[in-house]
Length: 356
Image (cartoon, rainbow, N blue to C red):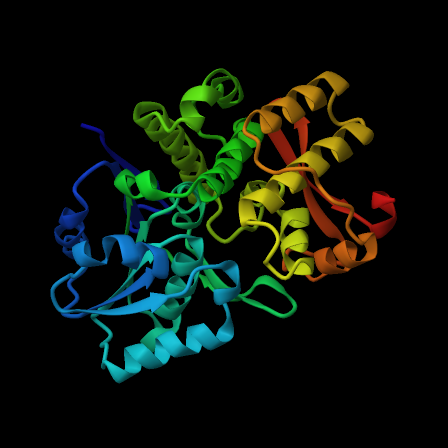
């Protein structure tokens, strides 16, 4: 039976484990209490997860807050509601918050944990592919505002991450593919992640698309493990996104803008990122950073996974304005992660006229 353990090593004193397995969901309670001394636990659970697995997630000495699904729920009002729920139930500084759900639940719960009583224990139990390979690891927590995505937040690392892949068996097809977008992202930045090992992830994803799309358990576990090893390598070298960690935003600058201008209704995060990756690849070729051959090969890889349908035309000015609201803008320059060669990418500065 699969039972992998990875370490995110930020320093000799600051590290935490990621567990990847198909263990019984009922065993999560025991696992969680191995990584916190909390007397009471606040479980923040996504509505869909609670409907399917709620009966298996009744931890001892726990209280449960059920959060509605969707990116629009990651807002200031819900942040305040969860804080008030914790205060009303008298959570203490030695207690803990456990996020059980996708990226929205993890992000907002982590922000509550980071700010409640100036910080209490936080544990991630991602239940979507996207959360498993991306948002549950690295300590980025926060909420969206009217001005943009994740504009208010903190870096706050979890005590542990439990990727129980049984949750993925009930994940709907659209959410599964939105997670694949974050997986495919790593194929374009693998060498830049400086993991010290060559996975040849681009080729692996090309050759195994049928098995991945059919959710072959062995292959699925492998792509999750590779994705997490690459992310852990980056986070260990640059926890606060001062340099290297910016490469993890490949496809995200435009992706976040698309989410914002469509009011988080039309596209999932992964769909928006897929559009963003295609744009970044095209822009890189236009700027002479990559060859036409690599551009076409890259388009084919993304197309294999049918991540998003035909992209409509967007109002260019609205998109550029949205990109200028991104938290990664510096000195009036929009930051774009572009491929520079196979499996490598760099963060480059752009002005509005560069996109016309």
